[in-house]
Image (tube, rainbow, N blue to C red; front, side, top):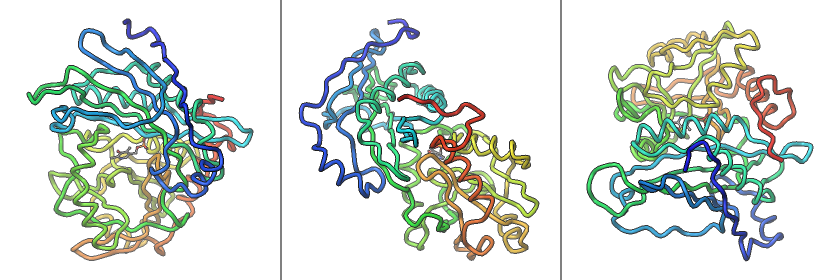
Length: 364
Ligand SMILES: *Cc1c(COP(=O)(O)O)cnc(C)c1O
C-alpha cells in the first residue's frame, strides 16, 4: 500500500459498552490512567505488507507470545495527547500533528516502521469520536495513548519484522491533586536519564523503565518528582522523569534547557516558549547548572520554576531536595508568571482564548 494513501478503518462497535450510569460514576473522579473507554484502535505492520488491518474495535486484552521481542528487548514507543470538550460542546485536540511527527522520530530511532502522519491522526480522531461520551467535563480530558511495539516471536537481536500500533483512551481529571500546590523535586545525583547518542530525545518506554529507580528514591525522600542532571558533567539540569523544566527570573525572562539530544522535545515546552515570546518575554534555551540554580534561588534572582508536559500541563516547583541540602524557590508556592502561562495555555486548549497560532484542531 502506498504510504500516502489513507488506510481504510474497519469499525467493530463494542457489543456491550459500559452502561451510561456506570460510566457517569466512573467519570466523577477518574484520577489519571485508570479509567479506560470502550474501544481501541489497532493497526498491523508486517514486512512486505506494510501498514494494514486498521480497526476501531472493542478494547480488550492483547495476547502475546512469550517470545515476543518487545518483552525481551523493549522495542516500544508511545505518545500522549489529550482531547478536550470545549464550551460550545465541541471536541478539540491540541497540536496532534506534532505528536505524529514525534512518533515518527521515535520510530526511526528505535528502528521501527514510520506511521504516516495522516494515519496517526485518523486513528486518534476515530477513537475520540467513537468514545466521545467518555470525555469528562470540567478540568478533565480524554488522555490518548498511541503506542507501537515489536510483535514478532523471535529471540534474535534485530529489529522485529512485525509491529502493532495501538491507541487507547483514558478519562482523566487534574493530574496532580491539589490544583495550584507546588511540587517538590528530588535531585538525582546518582542516576541519569539519558546520554549523548542514547534515546533521551525520543518517547520510548525504556527511558521510563530506567528512570523508575530515581523516581522511587524521590518518593522515599518525600518528593513528588525527580529532576535529572546531564550524564557527563552531572551539573546541567535536564528535565524531570516525564516533564520539561523552566526557570523564571526577577526580570521576567525565562530559561529552559536546550534540545541537545538528551531531553525530550516537549510540545508543551515548545508552545510555552512561543506564548512567552509573543507576550514580549525573553526566553533563553540555554544550559542552567545546579550550582547556579541553588545560588539564584538563595539570592532571589530566580523567582519561579515549573515543570511542564501534556499530562499535568504546568506544575510549579516549590522545593528542591538533595543529599547536598534542600532549597526553596520564592515562597515555595506557585508564582504569577507560572500561573499566567498556565491559564493562557489551558485557555487556548479549551477554546476560551483566541488561538492565534492555529494550534487547536476541532474534530467535532
Ligand atoms: C512526554 C514527555 C515530556 C512532555 O512532552 P509533551 O509533548 O509536552 O507532553 C517531557 N519529558 C519526557 C521525558 C516525556 O516523555
